Amino acid sequence: WSPDGTKLASASYDKTVKIWNALTGELILTLEGHSDYVYSVDWSPAGSQLASASYDKTVKIWNAVTGELILTLKGHSEPVLSVDWSPEGTKLASASYDKTVKIWNAVTGELILTL
Image 1 (tube, rainbow, N blue to C red):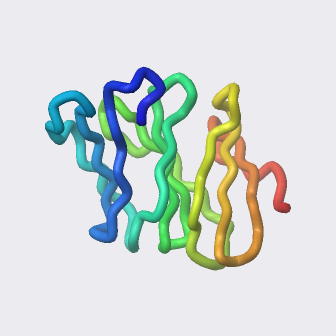
Image 2 (cartoon, one colour):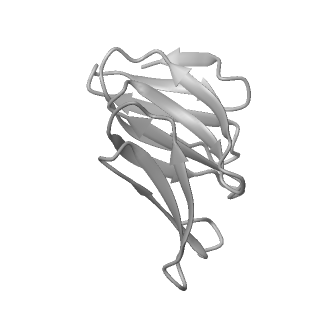
């Protein structure tokens, strides 16, 4: 769900992320750019961005209004299963089959920490 509750984002085996109107069910946007299954999505706290985690070993940050790809975060050696924004929206955590959690700067894409 988007923070305001009006939209829903879905991850898909067709390698896309879809943004839906949660009130009408209408498809708003289809985000294409991953090269393998998309496993997880998460809205930024402000609702302006969406992060996606994929079997292609990347995390992507999207403009949730226009669908534009903002950043691709690379650093995991195995598929990425989960992604989560920090409460203030400046960092992103990703968890992978490679048994690591990575903390990223969501503005620059810089890797901050590997757990």
